[in-house]
Amino acid sequence: MSKCDSTLFDSLKIRLVITNSPPLVGGLEKVCLRLAQNYKQRGHDVLILGRFSKERHGLQGYFCETEKPDQIEHEGAQVQVLALSCWSRLLLWPVFKLIWRKWTFPLARWLYVAAIRGQIAAACRGADVLHYLGTGVEMLGFAALSAAKKNGAIFVVDPAVHVGKWGEHWIDAQLFTEADLMFCYSSKEGEAIQRMGVAEEKIQKVPCGFDYSDSGDGEGFRKKHAISGPMVLFLGRKTMEKGVGRLLEAWPMVAEKFPEATLVIAGPKSEDFEKLKSEIRDSPATSHSLHATAPKALNLDDLTEGEKQGALAACDMLCVPSEGESFGMVYFEAWAYKKPVVALDLPVLRESVGATNGGLLVQDTPSEIANGITKLLENPALGAVMGAKGKELASRHKWDAAVDAYLQNYTRIMATIDK
Image 1 (spheres, rainbow, N blue to C red):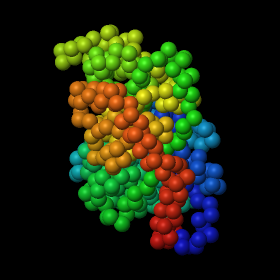
Image 2: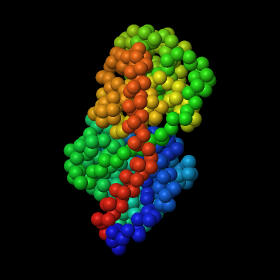
Image 3: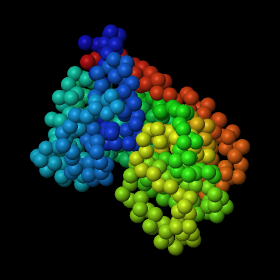
Image 4: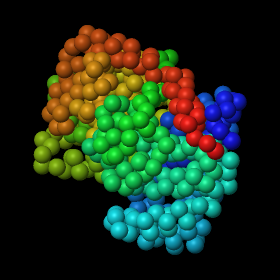
């Protein structure tokens, strides 16, 4: 039966496959959740298939750790946890070492697919679309690819490549070149995917959506936390990758010029956050003690959505000096409130922050990060102009437009493939 029959597009059976699934919090997890919710609202049969829903693991943990099988309803979306049996865990034990050599990779790939095949097969039976969110080295994408081929479904990859940092390994290229369709969020990401050998016609740039909101209670947030002066916000996972360590190193230099300013670090709990603070405090390169700024530094864990929106409304600027981004959803969330942003000068962010002049792109040093923050604190009018320009771009990235683009591309590819 040909996918050209337009009546088949009325309701699609879509399986979203991701290693770390909602309720876990992160940019890719948010994209997955919002796609599932929107697809469901539009009448599609959608299910999220994830390996981990309660706790993140390092890359090696993706192969030897597992959660119990589970069916979760999270914010209206259905999530199925793909658990490993004892036999499967034994089968995967050597895979992590075998994947890194090209001559052992085919065996590793076969072992991984064999180990996860039973868990993924039933959920994908009869699917029209298998949409994998992730990269190749996680290996789950190869299992999803196998299931897609078995079911005659199209196989789509949403890799969120962090150009120059993540997602450009030859294993990633192996998965990407076998996909029917590759999504990207920026021209730079698309160019990186093409350099890995993916045909240009298979790569489609889509407008990544984000939770557009500008109704947070900023005054209430400031009152609750006794914040009266300028407020700088970090929002995200408190890891070195996301830049919390960089910001902690830079903050004493900001506090020296603006002692009345408050740094708010908000996001999911992180076991290594205290370790990060300790390492920075004890570093000979750090001339200031973090103790000195403690009254003007606030650490908040696991904010509710209302508290998060309140923090965005309350801040004077957002500073997330992340070392790798594929889109930068958090910057768009700040722009919805007309807040300027300070970010590292990454190729991907030059297309958003740089092109719109919605904030400052700085070099990856504590002094440059501090200089970016102080420049905006010294010139609120400049920050207001930048925030307004950012909002213009943010208004074009709401979820409806993103979901339209995803579905249109599904159906475009399906129309060229016989099931």
